[in-house]
Image (cartoon, rainbow, N blue to C red; front, side, top):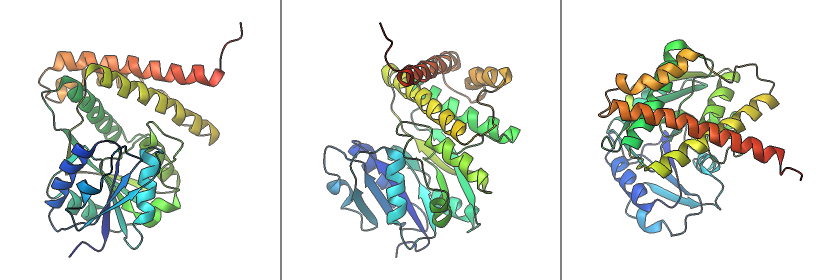
Length: 292
């Protein structure tokens, strides 16, 4: 009998192979089966054949609107469930992932729980560098108790009622940073963010040099969208971190046990160049075309 308390939401877009693998891992979760809502964000090919083998999986489809909007759709569809668990289609949850998130959330009002994310592709230097950066951000914000603490959307759990009350994800973040925005609004609404490192997923995001650049370029665009949202809310939090933060970021591959720490450190540096490029591109678009 499916779990009656919590529902897992997965947004997906044109990645049927990754979705199929993720559903295999979800089917092996302890204390299951867990109900799963897959939100097809306007994929080119039907995803029915991927989901049909699983009785606990429901499939809904929307016109392409971005992952934040897809997660909101899944949350609305999860009527009757107390808790929402968010994961992405390229993730491989550990067998006790869902149980640990639910236990840590514990039905506590306005408690947002995030779990630990590891790299499932250690032989891919681009995936390793990207995960090293993410791990550093978790480590830095948790250790320093920063007001900018956030959890990424691929490993997160909260009460459905609380998620809806804060407005869910802002669909205006069509590219990136919707997780940061939600985390900030969550805290502003009086909520707490609790890290549960025992709730683990392995992230299997295959990257090449062009896709690595594109990913972090988009993060730069997302950062600009976030800064505009903060300005609209007259949020006083600083938009830049200290020099110590950026030094720690560049040296993080040496602390996280990467297989190629020098190469990964260089790629982390490149990621920041890509982010600046994306941020600058958004600024240029806001200013519009120059007059001759």
